[in-house]
Length: 525
Image 1 (tube, rainbow, N blue to C red):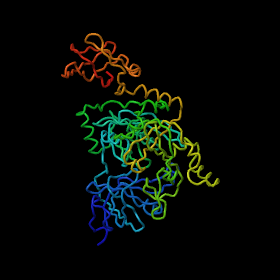
Image 2 (spheres, one colour):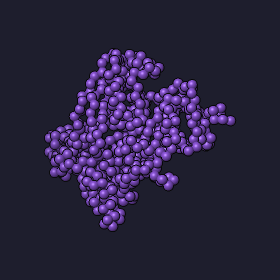
Image 3 (cartoon, rainbow, N blue to C red):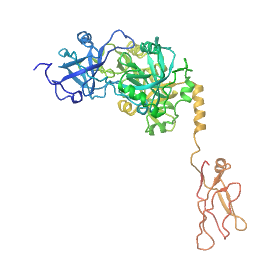
C-alpha cells in the first residue's frame, strides 16, 4: 500500500504507543526559530498542522534537516506525512494543546496533495476573561480575536544594546478589554493595515500570541516569527463576531483612537511602593493565590544545596544533554549556543518568619555587577571551589523583593519562590517600612491584669490599671468579663457592657466584696 492511498490517522489519536503514523494535514503556520541575538541564524523550523477534523499539532524540523524540508513545505498547502517521530509536547510556549508534538527525521516522507483543501485556519480562539484568569502564567500560545479600539504610535525600546520596535493595540471582545503589544517587524504589518481605507473599528485576529504581564496588567504579545495577524478577515468567525457585538452593547462604528505615544515610565519607587500588594514573609508563605508581591527582608543564609550557576540557552532556559547533545528545555530543541547563568537560592527573613527565594541572572548581576561567566572565570584563576566569596557576602543585605508566586515554578525550584526584581535603594526601603506600619491594622491585643483591686466607700470599687495598660489604652473602651463574689454564698454574674476608662465602672447595687477582672480586650472600632 502506497503512502498516497493509505488511510490516515486523525491528529487527536497520536500518542506514543506506535511508530507507523500517517497524517493528512494542512500547514497553517510555518516559521523559523531563532534567538534574539542571532535572528538570521535559525536553529529549527516550526510548523502548526491542522487536519480534516480540526485537530492541531505542532511539528519541529531540527537545524541539520532544515535544508531538506524548508523549501519543500509551503504554508497553506495540504500534505500527507509519514515516518516521523513524536515527543511529549513540552517547552515554555507550546503552539498547540496536544499532548505530543511531531519531530521530523531523515526518513520522514512528505507528499503534496494538490487540489485538496482543509477548510480550517487552525484557530483556537480564547476570550479575554480566560486570558486574564492565567494571571500571566501560561505555557501555551493562544489565538485571540477582538475589535481594535486604540493604537499607539511606534516607539523604540533599548534593552542590552538591542533596539526593538513596539506598538500597543487595545482590543475588545464581548468579555472585556486587553492590551496587545506588537514587537519587531510585525509593526510594519500593522502600519500597513492602517493605511487601508476602513469604515468603523476593524476586527483583528492574532494567532500564536503569548500571555504577558505589563505594569501589573495581563495582556498578550506577538512571538517573533511565529505570530500571524489578520485584519478584517473575510471569514465566518469574524463576521459572526462583529455582528454579535451589538448584543453586548459594543459600538463598532467609531474611529480608532490613539494611545498616548510614550507612557510615563514606571519608576523604581512606584514599582515597589504602588503597583503590587505588600506582604510580610509570613503572609507570603501562607498565600494560596498566584501573582506578584513585594516583601522586605534580609538575606540570612545562602542555600548551597545546588550549584550557583546553570548552563542556559539564549532563551535563558536551562539545557540538558539528551542523548549526548545540548537540549533546551524551554525551546524543546537542540541548542548550539550556551552560556552560564546565575541561579542562587537564599533564605530571607523579616525578623519574624523566613522564606526561601531563588534569584536568577538579572537579579544576581544587579547585586554583583558582574556576569556569571566572568565570576566563574575568576574562580578558575583563583582556584576557588564552591560558592565565591562575592556571593557569600549577600548575607546581611536588606532588600525589597518583587516575587512571583507560581505553583508550577515553585515545584520546579524545590519550593523556592522566584525573585523578579530587587531594590536596594535605602530611601525606598525606608518609605516602604513607614507605609507598612501605617497600613497595618490595629490587631487584637490583651492588656496586663490590673495591679490593684480594692473596695471603695458604699457599693463601688476602684480598679487601678498597671502602667503598661495605661500606656496601651488611650480613649479606649473595655468590657469586664464578669462580676464575682457577694457577701452571701450566692454568686452574681452580670455583663457590665462597654464603659469609658475615664469613669470608674459601676457595680450592681448589692454588697460586693470584689470584682475579678481577667483582662482587657481592645478592638479597633
